[in-house]
Length: 530
Image 1 (spheres, helix red, strand yellow):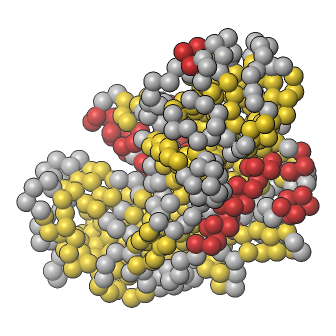
Image 2 (tube, one colour; image 1 turned 180 degrees about the vertical axis):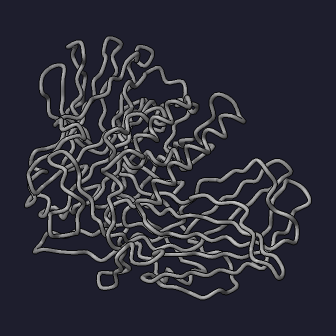
Image 3 (cartoon, helix red, strand yellow; image 1 turned 90 degrees about the vertical axis):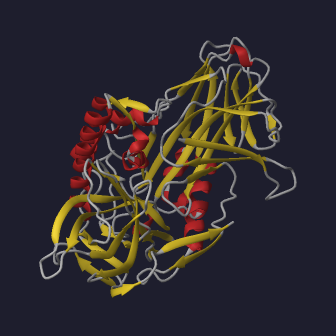
């Protein structure tokens, strides 16, 4: 579900400008309301920029970004179309992210609690990453708005939050936080993002302080009562997710294989440190649901060559491992009762709680008073991720078999969050996950998953795991780069099937990241106040 919160904000000045916080619990959109306008083409915008070769393109080698049409606005005549390209930033949980149309991201006051592995919270690194994203979007992306029939556009060319350049009577170029076009009954609009050519120049990017990194955004279309930027009469009618990858300069970071122009290269240095997060279990007579989470940190040292800098943590990375559930028995070896792969995707330069797959089994696994052990083993980020995707396929088939021909994709949050990638050439098969339809066919979802599994682009084959620049290990030289162990006693609640975890003990082993011995304690978490 996509929660849209529209409120007046007087931060960053006294003009009371409109602040849109699009809280994305997952990459899905429910019905937007009763606005008459319809946005056609909400496919993800995904491009790769290579400053080293002054080139860019989508993943078919085309130097173009497909536009969207905004049509059937007759009932909104006299109102205004508002266009906004907002920079995306995740909150304290991977389930929630916001799209900021102003440079107003504030990480808030957060504290790491109970983690014996991740010792420090670094909000400034996250804020710096956001500000680079925001600066790139405002400096490098224009919106060309035109009437598809050649009709006249009515646009105030002196807007407080938008630079407007008139191309001709039926088209304008717009750049800014909020850009407005007056709706006329006879207009059908085409909205096309354009990349400025100077943003391919490494010296231009260096001068702006833009690093090689992943950039995430949302292009949102709204209908408003006026073009003041202060009205609360706002309705959201469409959104397109945006992912831009700026490839690091060779030699700055270790990179994946060069497959030629148009194919992005990614760092092969793995930097995600993890610990247990809160665990929730429900177990009834005919069904068990296990919700794991992990406290993760994707923050690494920066590498610089002159004024050009980047970091392996500037890019999204998977954190996925094999999970084994054992029943502990007196005077006997632990009994393996279930096994799956769990985890998710960790945003760039981010620390927080990453939610798992909400694993479901059509059986009762837990008994009151019994002792259990969970072991999460993280061995090879790329191979673990491929197995994880195959596991999602099997889980989908089981859900479709038991719950009908279609199933709300929000049943498996991990699948919908795959939309954050936007870096797979065949990713178009997952387009239904970004539409206004919360149920998609099994074949559609399977097609998208097959494209992800077959990809040779991402994840790259990581050849090292690094806790910092000087402390690295070669992947494959050890059985794992991290292993988490959790032991507990199951206490069954009288009603509802909830399992309370008591006598909790945790352990972490790692040849590169900080380890800790088996010990009692509360689950690690990140607590924030805003």
